[in-house]
Image (cartoon, rainbow, N blue to C red; front, side, top):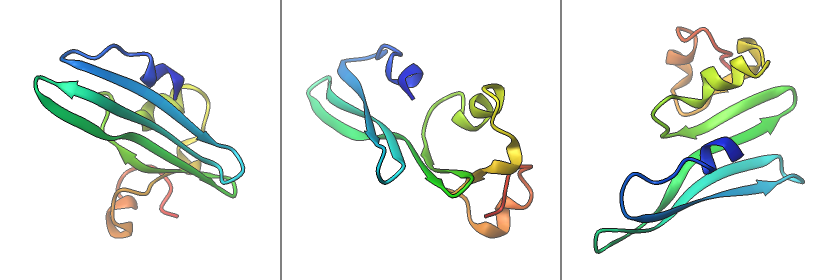
Length: 97
């Protein structure tokens, strides 16, 4: 998570921040600031840990965080692409639920 928050913004004065909610096992990277003359605020990455699974609830990174999690040692069968419908997840190579 901190890796994605450390990537500098390509445009404007946008800051990336991490949110760690350990008691609820929820983690986010958000972007907030100004792009040109417009206010921007939104979630880049949202991860929940449920039991032994890592649920990717939102991923708007260019590279995709799922593959990075695999590279860091989390097996594909423990990663759920929660932002996809269950009917599609079975075709991704990642966990369905």
